[in-house]
Figure 1 (cartoon, helix red, strand yellow):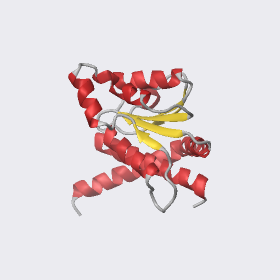
Figure 2 (cartoon, rainbow, N blue to C red):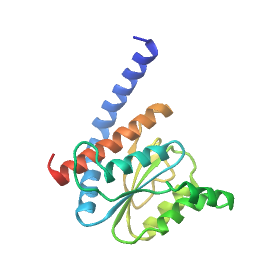
Figure 3 (cartoon, one colour):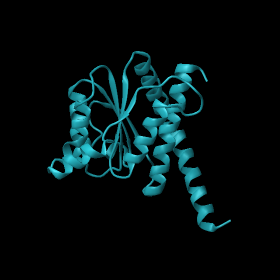
Figure 4 (cartoon, one colour):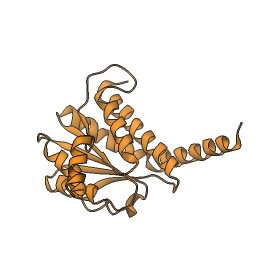
Length: 192
């Protein structure tokens, strides 16, 4: 086997073990919150910056469609997934407002916002986080820098860290955490 492939596999396996051992309980609590949210008629909102946006869109699709078995749709929305709105906001010089603008277009009700952050400065995610918290909704964070992320502040109970500086491994861990969250929620709601 190619040594690069073997090294990447070993690195990812170690990171998955570390993530599960250190943050499995927090992920389980988050899954219970999300399942309770869905059972009560609420929505899961997902948003990410940089390379995490495609992960967010894929995860929203897993919740809305399905992951492992046929089941009813779970209301999950990828904030910022409207390319026309994003292009309009960028062209008008309001790129940092595109996520919150999308959020404002949604109907009310109980919501939980799950942010995926690369740990860098993200005014768009900060503005969205602040408005969601002001609306007294729940916010959780999956971050490359964990509690050191500027997005992790008072009002955010759940802050999952991606324990690596490698961007490819961060993306793999983010997808793993999101898909595992979906599986745990499905198990809570549908008993599988």
